[in-house]
Image 1 (tube, rainbow, N blue to C red):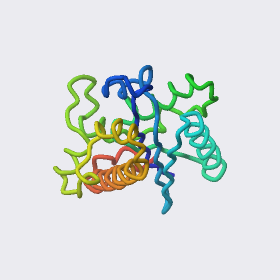
Image 2 (cartoon, rainbow, N blue to C red):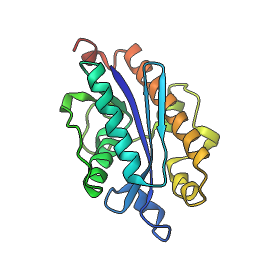
Image 3 (cartoon, helix red, strand yellow):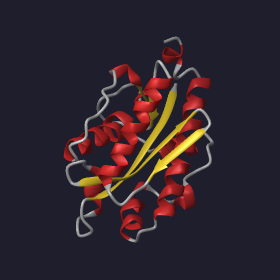
Length: 185
């Protein structure tokens, strides 16, 4: 079963620079979104540890229901999942290990697995492929300020839009045979 996964991050402190949100050493998770089957789960809490625990609890539940889980995202390997694992370490939370084949990183597929010089954002690929854009035109760089202002509903809506865009981009990539190597596994 495919799980669309996206996270939103902010710096560890309100005084930190916004770019600190991009590292799991200087940033924290403020929201995790999952979309699978016809369900969407968005976890936003003040306490990062609660967010991460709820995420791993849901993954544990889904592993009991389905024989195979595949995490689908845009830059999921280099950012989202890596961030979750590292922040799990920071919060002393036991993770549920996944196989390297458990990930479909749309950015990697679209860049033909180039290790360096990956270009393009989810927003740019959405526009390129005709998928409706981001929530209120916001970007990930908007999240730290929204978090600081306690605009959790805005973050939730933004995260929900990213899940929709990622799901549609994944479908488009499968339709165009970009994801063909995963369809027979």
